[in-house]
Amino acid sequence: HIVTIALDDHGQYVPAQEPEPNPELLTAFDDSPPVVVRGNLPNVYDGIYRAAYSYGMSKAMTKRLIKLLASGVDFQSRLNPSDRIEVLFSQPDGDDQASDESELLYVSATFGGTTRNFYRFQMQDGSTDYFDEDGRSAQQFLLRNPLPAGKFRSGFGARRHPILGYVRMHTGVDWSAAIGMPIIAAGNGVVEKAGWAGGYGKQIIIRHANGYETSYNHQSAFAKGIAPGVRVRQGQTIGFLGQTGLATGPHLHYELIVNGTKVDPMRVRLPVGKVLKGDDLVAFKRERGRIDDLLKQEDSDSLKVASAKIEG
Image (spheres, rainbow, N blue to C red):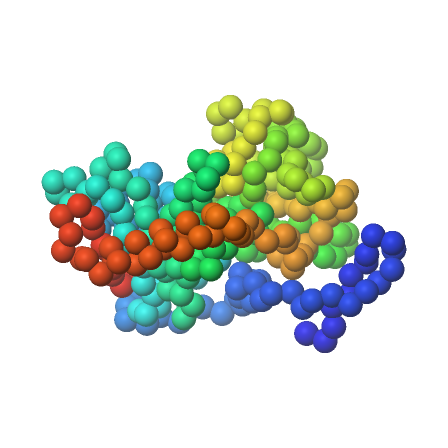
């Protein structure tokens, strides 16, 4: 990185902060075969599911765990023997499995040498979210990858179109996976469009706060209830992967539009999520301390701690 500049509201170029490294972008163009250690380990996405189910987590709780980690974990990278997840959930049943009343209270996830810890916390307005040790929300404003099971295939920028045959701007990024894989909303918002859009095929456009929009293209089908005017939440399934429109194979063409201009979803600096302040921060620190104490009580009758290496 040499320098970053930005265009301000007055049309003047000004110095800006260096973008934060994006793990998916750093490995996006690496076509070398994965390094295999201790056998043919699965990818992170499969490994999380295997570990979660083997330690008694329910299907719904495992989906919540996937959504919680989606913003910072490359699900398609190969597992490393040092990768781990530790979870604390309440009210296990008689078989030490998650019950219908169980809540995911704490998650510690280590992937690629980076550890992230999240605590469940209910705010004064009654809403519940997960926060790191300093009270920063685990939920980003927008996810960069709305296809958790997908592999990065093509970046933003000029390229030769595979069907039309001439060079033109590729105004989004492509993620590939099997037809029918679920596509999730990158952030909270309102569905602006759900229908056919020529070469884009079956398309959904979601309007978010502050001039941000996201576009999801080449879908095979929309999720039940998805229609213009419907409110969606980050991580909610909105459609399914396909190859409708001008597409040579099944993939999601994902676009991010800011104030009417299409930008690179992998490089743009996104607004930070919620940060606790005031009374909420004080209450959160109390709850964090309570959970930390519970983590030391692995023999508790009312709680279960699951800590394991994620392996194939």
